[in-house]
Length: 149
Image (cartoon, rainbow, N blue to C red; front, side):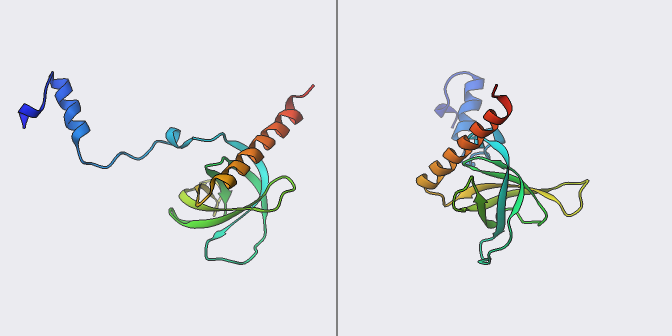
């Protein structure tokens, strides 16, 4: 097997590492940040995929990108749960998307309160483009409100 390796010991180590059959390491949070994010107070409804009822909306700060959301919730969803996320975005019809829960972190100083991190799934290009446009619109509104002369 040594005759397959060439070069210096450092190169030998790199070849051995690169040739391994192990699965790739999970992506870092930085790698997952493909889209611009903004935090804005929005009306949102999160419910399990199987729940077809029209529950109430909550108006809360939502960290939103075309890739997913971060939001504070009072339900202890589990990683890998699939949720239906409905957002009311600037006088539009409700925007519905499926959300895979990546993780749920307890907020220690607030009982029964959790930070949910999820990514949008099953979203086609047209839906994602719509969401990108709405996020840019929210950013424009924020800049006009806080930084216009």
